[in-house]
Length: 118
Length: 116
Image 1: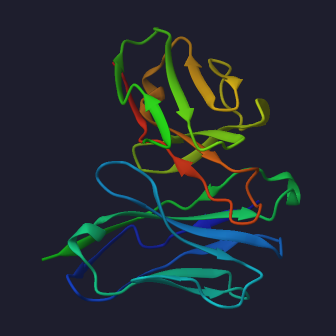
Image 2: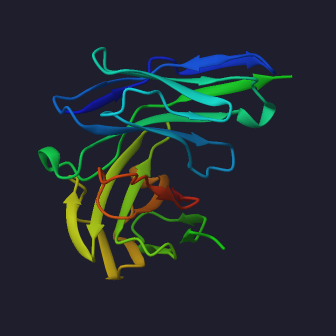
């Protein structure tokens, strides 16, 4: 079974500081996609960043970057220069390459609640 | 313009009632989903549809029946509502099935269902 684990239920960070959210996953597939989604209090799920497993280079999007360790099956999210608007639930998600193992869905972790402190 | 829109955003109803949640996407996507988010914020897939055809039914009770009249719409009908059905239900869509190049899911704002 493919699973996604986020071991940090809650985290806090001071404004302007850097924080790293952890995510590990379990799969026997060699090609897949990984995502980080943000869910602010408004409830809207927003894509933060995406990583293709066949790419060794870590994805970056402005203040957001990932540390993708394929062998360790780890996919952490680093938020630099944290802002109050980053306060949200963050979900790590996984999906195998199209058609692999018949999995046609996005599998989510249990989420990390991040609070940015003023 | 809202990409994926769900109605209603809030729904309070009594046990035993039947209710529907509607979802529409204007992104031209051909794959749509229903996810359930429980009180602990865990997101679990319920159904996936591709080109109006059901491709995933994740052991959801028969009281839940999705309907996709066309590629842009995926509605969720729930019969005989139970207390345990209280949750936030998210509709989502993607361009093609998950795992295609650059395919991420776009989500609606969710429907908070409260069964009393």
